[in-house]
Image (cartoon, rainbow, N blue to C red; front, side, top):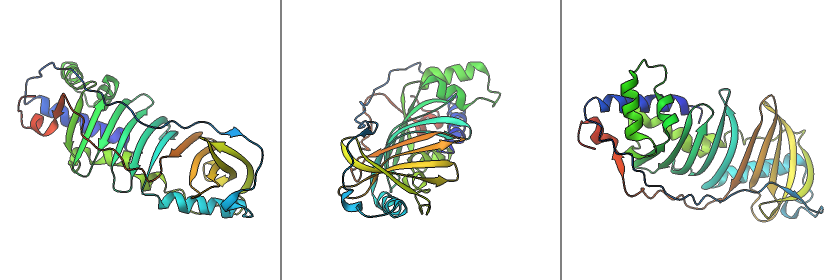
Length: 269
């Protein structure tokens, strides 16, 4: 995710080069895939109850169990708002440890892109802002930029998952990168109240981290997954986690899909 803008620039430059080899068709039809992403509700207070599987543990012990369980999951659904390189990023993505993903990501001032990634294929559908910003600063003539936007805005584009020009897009699907900070809890972590997140009982734990103060809500029944996390400090961030171990839907979109490999070769689109 840190490389979202870099990857977008590489992709935009690649498409522009390809467009010089073929005549734009002017087709802008797009086939939308309805979002099936589960929504995450904000925690709602409930009377304090025994913490179940976490009963009797300290804040540090609870957080370490939450970190371990979350890192150990094979897949998850993430809804997040976070600062990346000084810009706010919104993420709504299902992802797994194999690099598969399905969802959307938007960055302040950059635009929005839908992503479906499997072992073989990467599908992208971005808005006009994304495509224009992907080539910002490249001194590309306006006519070429307009042609690219006309051809690609809100249209699915597919390429190989191993394509050199788009390999950095894999960072958007990197579950290990997302949970890299779920390492070792601070001994100062403090256990808070028992509440509910998305209808599930959780216990809140707050402790210091490099970015400020982090509060995590850890499931107290069943596997102690982290269901929500927030950061308060110089930078603000919020993370909702759900659908643990649910397989990621990587089915290719149907309808009007542009093959970037054919575009590169100057073949008709």
